[in-house]
Image 1 (cartoon, one colour):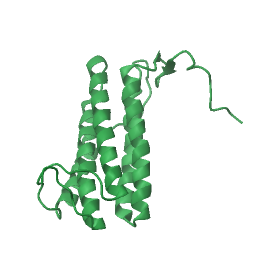
Image 2 (image 1 turned 180 degrees about the vertical axis):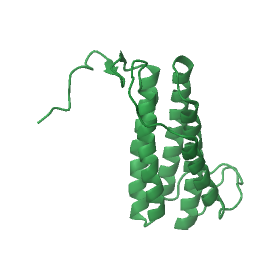
Image 3 (image 1 turned 45 degrees about the horizontal axis):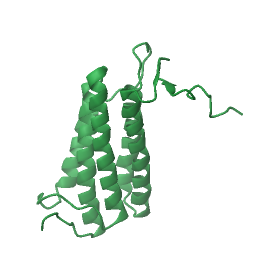
Length: 183
């Protein structure tokens, strides 16, 4: 049986893909760690959505979970890596935009900021949205120091928009009245 622990990180460093050891506080580690956190929240959202028989949303979230792992891998690449690894493409950004457009088609017009809550599916959509925005900020910080593919930034930015739209879409599907701030 292989062990999960290696002890190689006991002094505060970790390996990037390609073997370069960096501080666990490195901007790239912060970025892919936050995307990893987002992936865990997406998994919880998927479970909540499945409990409410919204299978087409489960399918969409399953795809997003895989794509987030690709984002993590892109952020964890060291300069020394000389292999091939999956990438995020403009087609994936366009797919997110199409999902947003499809969900928005039957929603009332945007009237103001939505207050999270009313159902745990809606609340978890907002948790995903806010963690996604934090991941975007961490990725932008990493991009100030390291080469980060611009498409990764676009993907994560669009993904947070998807989670907001998904919260509204799920609210309508679940019959939960949307709470608008300031009204």
